[in-house]
Length: 542
Image 1 (cartoon, rainbow, N blue to C red):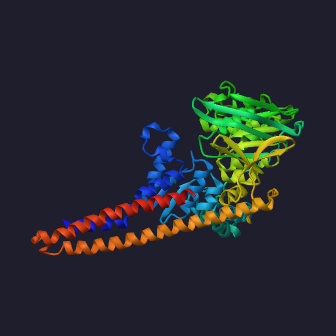
Image 2: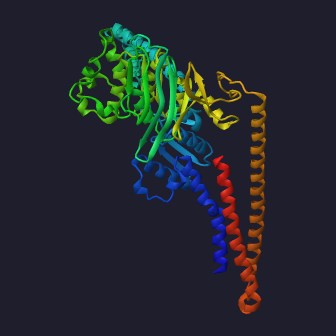
Image 3: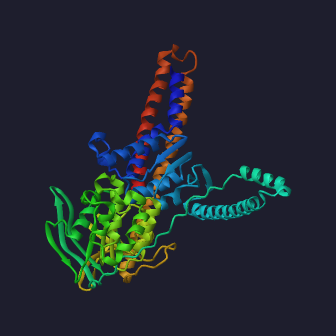
């Protein structure tokens, strides 16, 4: 039994049994769960969070082949970023389906394309695939043209000399040659739709302003004394974990939901469109797809309706379907298309890319890149945020912190918190901004650098040194604990070899001290492992 116990203990250790609780906590926190959620029964979570639980269970199992179908659904940007890093370092094979271009670029090393009803393998990430695929399709089109020209020449020869006896053998050989030709199949060329929003009068310099806003649902305070100032031309992405109040902030900005206290001020000549998460359910089910877009669109935009519908996968007789028979994804695509046809100078978009395929996302993205008005949006598509956002608002902890720059720069600010966000003023209006000493090296544009006096700089340097010393001290404690754990485990193995020797228990009095020592070491290892896990968890939270 002791030998069996020793074998099982070694297996348990080799399979990281002692650190399974730490690994479980790391995966759950990476997917957005809080420590307080760990003891909750699974059935108390919503469907989206149960999908995350299933994903966490799958990742912790570490199968040799991991199959993921749209794993980023129901994940916010922070959870997606964590999943990217996890899958990038995953030691085994992964096959996944995703409509998130940035996620594919960060994770995959091969692309399997199904365009021609067969698997075509491309080496590289999604951006590499786009280049290789276009080159391959262009080569196929060229070969197809050459084949069609050759077939046309052969048919012309056959038609010309079909009834001449002297050419009969040549005609027959060419007929047989045509029968053996395998036509080159080329996928139909999909038109690249480029669309621009209908013109609209400009808004005033100040578009929207929230002053001392407070919003709570029962005892859950979402915002407390929130101040936000939005100017014409801003392109703002709202970020933060699910449930912190991004959609609530969008509803308050749009005027659909009133704050408990505070003031919402609209700027001059504001023409707003608000695309809500549940936009698909708000549509009138009676009209057809075409009638839905034609209603409310300017007369000069009516000729573009067919092209827009085609860009969002409504082709042929699909345009005559009633809205009531459309699926949820089709309704969402129709709602996005309708938004593109209506004039506005301010857009509020809450998850507009849900249920959109990669091509439809490109149509929407290209249109928004050229949009001349003010844009405020929530999206969990990293590529979408990277292309559009020039300012980031981080929602959470009862407030909204504004960071100038792109999402890449925002992440750099988060990784290098030399300075904390502060209250600032622009044009006499108080707002919250994030600041940093310098922009990340990889960023394309440099955020504005606020002035820092020498006293403040010295204080920050002192805090940075203090933090660095704390990190070094914590790492030293971790190393010390790992050394002690290794020493105890070696001692346990030696004792277990002694205990498993024949005749060990013949002299009970002589065996008892060894047994007691073994038990004490086992308790000591358990205590050391617990302290090690606490330090590792503390380090990961930082």
